[in-house]
Length: 308
Image 1 (cartoon, rainbow, N blue to C red):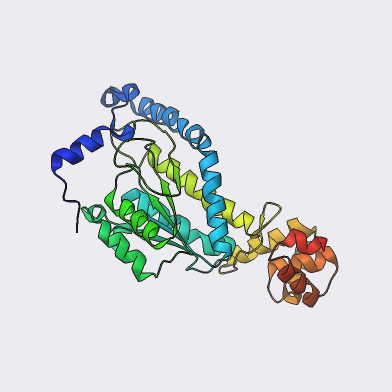
Image 2 (cartoon, rainbow, N blue to C red):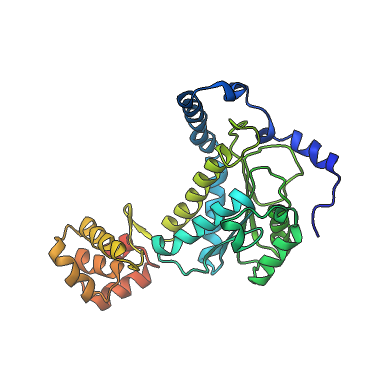
């Protein structure tokens, strides 16, 4: 079932959204030189980090909510359409190699399915029931977190996902670029950086998309740090699925322990290939079995395992 409201109703709704307004600073966009266009875009883009910064309190609440659910065996689902959906899929896809998470822990769902990742699927965003069906297919439950990503605050697909998540007791978070306007959002946390009108009117792949990318980075990175996936500022749960990641693993070990490049291979081999175990073994001067015991007791936190 797609959005059946009248065109006038949707027109009026869009008119209330900040991201659909004309930007007075770019009204002469078509008269500018190439350099002037780029300088204007750059000035507008600088507003985005500040707008996200004003939402830190809400982002913090969202991270705590995610940590709570993931620690209890839940999963994180990003749901969106178009640019928003692609950003969710991107962030979810990067979690396994960065934090060593199972591929099912953080998942991205985009309106229109896989095809929509590389090609615009117009109209897919208007079907809220399709989002509910996608979540149901993945057996989303009250243990999970559903994040609806939508620049406009009114995208039926993302709103439908939040509605379904709320109905089954999942934690729900909205990420939007419109603090007000559109239908009221009913969810646990609303993150709404006020980035203002776009340089190109209504093109929310610009500032709104940039803000969403920053927020999603903060949600997963903040949550994974809180879940013990990081030691100091180092990725200690990354998977060595490529030559680059193998070498990055060695660099992390060297930075964490002060070991030489020649030593890293021996330590990782003694640790059974586990970077965390290798770090605890060398830093604490313990056997592999003891390092594994300490890490289990510390719930994966390397710092605590070394200290204990």
